[in-house]
Image (cartoon, rainbow, N blue to C red):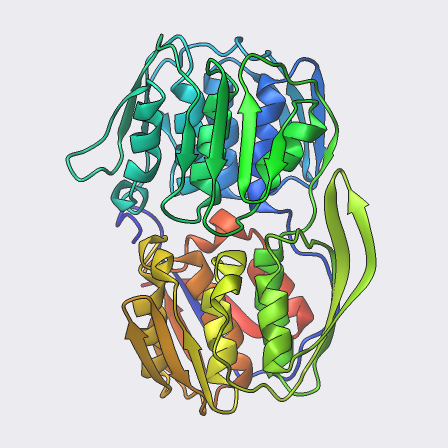
Length: 443
């Protein structure tokens, strides 16, 4: 949900032809967040290219500026961070406002728990409903003093000057944000901090720590750091975000005659669930020009329209595609037969309850979609015309925009202002690729 004081934007998407051409979507959101955090704590100057200039990443950038870090940019994806070292952050003059960014709040809570000053962190109406006990509980085991609301939601108040101790923490759920939070706190803790995950999650934090010269031990599903080390500045070239590329991958897969190439996309093995799932559904998808950039694997992704079929989504792919499911649900709606998702309870506590909101939207467009406690059952069918409420969730808004490619008539999507948080320029890029889409103020 978005604050009523914010501008309200409506998307109007009409049935289009096909998607074609070569496009580069904006930089990876997860890597952009971490480049600011680690660059700020490093010794030396970190040059970042391909930085995602969305509101969530800018919230992270402004938080570190507020704590005394000199950061130049962003300008055309270029950011220069003058690192202050592990112990150079200063107390901010006021509460850190993190907008809609759960990543900023959860990762920062780990860093803030180890600083010598008190800090409060808050956010918008949506962020203020997101669960934080998943990070505050293990941080307290390390010796942190953190307060939340009675419901375990923001704002967070972190008391400085605590001596943290390393812990061995088996995570109850697969969450890269929890893992990263504890590893960042572990940089300051006495002894070893180890996190064991029940299923693989994105490992950008571990890769970037290694790139900044901080030793990380990994074996199986366990990751450990030893406190007391230092970070040395290193250049970062942020790959294009696979989560943002997903909308175009799905659009091309469902729209007859499509043939699109998405350039320089990060294909980190912990993030490629969407590629694996689309291939299982029968999409024509190729990885071209595979290479490594700054420790992250990258490729150009070519997608052509294919006859999609419904599948039972393998549960081992769920953590690898957790942000991509809204778009994948649109692919399922256009597939022949039934698609079943289980093991995805996490989707109910994102920017919206993504399972229920997507089910409601698909039903509004004439698709048989039934939410279950941990997933959804979708019968492929014909997408009709209609009006869908995105509930201020950027990924839902963009998913339904792409759905128009296969719809019988126009789709109107409300509450779309937050699209700029993750994908600045989405409307222009989608139009360039062939989608008939306009954004206008809601009157």
